[in-house]
Length: 168
View 1 (cartoon, rainbow, N blue to C red):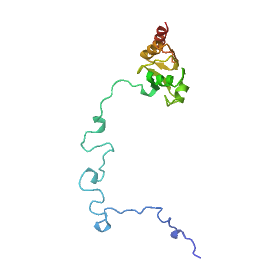
View 2 (cartoon, rainbow, N blue to C red; view 1 turned 90 degrees about the horizontal axis):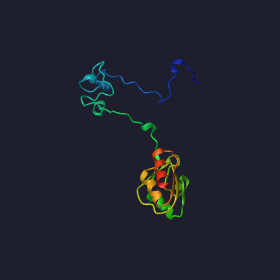
View 3 (tube, rainbow, N blue to C red; view 1 turned 30 degrees about the vertical axis):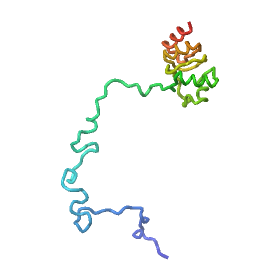
View 4 (cartoon, one colour; view 1 turned 90 degrees about the vertical axis):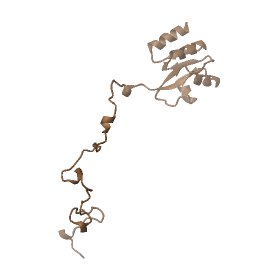
């Protein structure tokens, strides 16, 4: 049985990379330029350029436009957008009370977590009761013209005023 000595301890095969001895002559395989290429700033000792340096090309931060103003995109509210033409499809299917749940069921909207915004594209002929989070003024007028009832949940004053005018 072989005894273990400190001078016989070796790491497992493949667990450590072999060290490349650079710049010790051409016979070593890494002589002449020592893996640094030909002449230039980076072949010298102490030669270094920052990662963002683009070697004379106009740098990215100078190519980008100067952004001005304020963007509130982080806190922007997103909505499922539906049109009057989508409501007409549901009305033809026999749905008279249109809510968010009914729209999800008929696959008019896809995202449950977002609110619903009604836009005035298309034509609505059926008399329907509708509940949405937001609505454009043209959509409010079109629903009132068709004889339907629209409830806007967001409490947006402009739309509520439009709704009140449409009901009169």
